[in-house]
Image 1 (cartoon, helix red, strand yellow):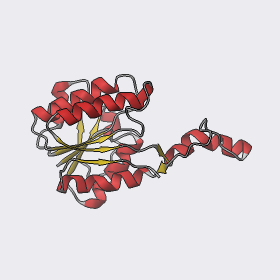
Image 2 (cartoon, rainbow, N blue to C red):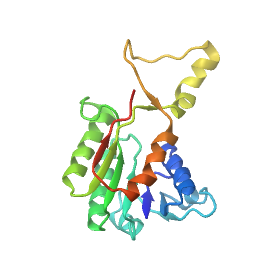
Image 3 (cartoon, one colour):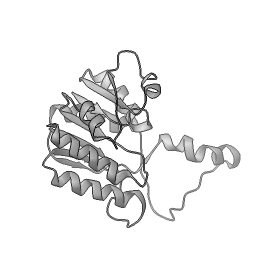
Length: 191
């Protein structure tokens, strides 16, 4: 059984959709009943909060693998660390961490936060997979569609740098396989 955290977010929702197609047993984690009610018919749901050790222990009951994703918020390190600790306590065998490209390369913001969590996961004794995607194609709609509509262009403070855009469905496609082959691998998702 795989626990899919962040099931109401963009990445988590894509993973839930892929899990449904794969037929691999899973449970979708939501923070509220209101969010859980939006789950597709037949999806097993659980209400839990990263900040509550007790609710996480309940969510992890009978779970072998966890897909862990958190919004890029300042509490990311604390919240994801609690999930790693609870996973180890409950006997989870494998954890897939949705990290970020540049984790550890930048001293500020969420890439640095992700590296702290990656290091904790590596030291946890759990088998793990770390995914380091860059930007998601779905973010184009959220962040650059307005300038495309109004100016016929989009802008980024990238200079000559290359950036990779991944479809969230491509990330989601690897999650069912992780439950069948829990090994420690490192995936860097970029051009």
